[in-house]
Amino acid sequence: MKLNAENITLLFLSLALMLFTARLFGEIFIKLKQPAVIGEIFAGIILGPTFLGMIAPGWHEIIFPPSPEIRIIQDGISILSVVLLLLVSGLEVDLSILLKQGKTASLTSIMGIIFPFIIGFSVAFLFPQLFGNNYNHPTWFFALFIGTALSISALPVIAKTLLDLKIFKSHIGSIIIAAAMFNDLIGWIIFSVLLSLIGVGVQKFSLLFTIIYLFVFIFAALILFRRIISKTVEIIQNKFSSPGAILNFILVLGFFCAALTEYIGVHAIFGAFIIGIAIGDSVHLKEKTREIIHQFVTNIFAPLFFVSIGLKVNFITNFDFVVVVVVVLLAFAGKVIGGSFGARLGGLSKKESLIVGFGMNSRGAMEIILGLLALENNLIQEVTFVALVIMALITSLSSAPIMNYLLKRKEDFNLNNLLLSKNSIISYNGNKESVINELSSIAAKSTKLSSQEIVKSVMEREEQLATGIANHLAIPHAKLKISKPFIAFCKHQSGVDFGAADGIPAQFIFLLLTPEDKNELQLNLLAEIVKKFDDLEKVKQLLPIEDKNKLVAEIKAL
Image (cartoon, rainbow, N blue to C red):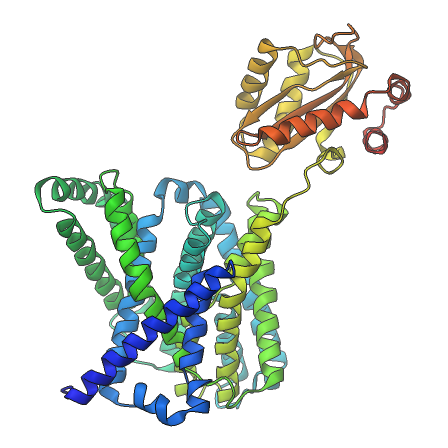
């Protein structure tokens, strides 16, 4: 195969048009306060068979000719782009934070697979006609494919969305990317099973050995050779020309590991992503180097990849409204509910869990690749394929705006919302220290801090200034490394001395914990509690109440 002058001309013309259109629509969506990735995917839809191919098929065929030579090169550029995107995403990952999110990320990932798989498999098995199944394969096999297709996420789209929203390095961002990584590792394993069952290609290794080799690679990259890589980064940056030498090293290692994982039967993007984590974990890697490769990839190669998604399909031909609606609804229900439920089990708030659920909902190119293989092997019909692609694009397009909305929406933190019966106690004995210890133990269960850490911070605050207010009220409080405020409440029957100005022992004790960076929130909550207890006569009516549920309700009604 040899490219002639016409092929070369059309290749570079198409690349120039893809980059220009991606940048244009990316900037438009940035102006609309949306991530650029949405505009880049939309640019592909405009240039693809859906729009340009329909209104000007001649021009579309000239710019994107069906030449196999050009198609192979374009596919190669697309693969290169996504590998580089995952390499850069890996560089941005803080491994220490990633490891700390192990429990939450694994629960999110597992539930984000189980829920959509069960939903997709069940509906496809019981009602295969809703998906346009042509019955060329057994129904259970078709259902297995649908369950798998609805379970996977799109790590490249998720990574780009988090980068665009500027939350990649945040607490929530690290959970989403860690969960997506675990999710897609499992997804690729299931995908490998499907490929072997469909009979696509020749597998170099059995499934068992592929899994073993994969985990050996992860262990070697992130544990065995991490320090060696870090030391190599230091030597290269100190002894060789900068930044060229270190950029060369990063790309060489990234491409080698991409080739390695592709060889053992797992997609190249995972090799690039994992080695990116190992390189990015080095304390010697300069921020300037990160920024150079980040700008290079996210402004050139990433747009080419996301535009290529829209070039692959025509959304009008073989469009079936019912099939599309069924696939999209099942995809949203399974992934958002599953991911949110897993995040909630991992200890996140309702709002944070929803952000994680929608963050995991992007499907992207993985769905298209899987759909193409299934279509080529007569596992699905064209209408199902189109529905899967539309679902992939809708989930990719919708996740960022929904996450953006949830991130901007302010949570209503007030006493009535934070004061809960389950975090309240009635006490009859003990001094100030014992009450604070008891309330700190309650707080530790919800904040994931140790009770000793909470007690230490609260008692340090007590030593600075007494927290007894007046009218039987005391509010011991502290600022801690937590994401949202927490209140534990104690009604002490005999009263405890918290140094109140009126000399009255405190019988209503609120332990208030707030995030370190939210001074105004702490002041507002303190003021709200004090205001509730400013009328001594009303407070006295609360003193005889010994049922904590009734007491909490009465305090909220003040």
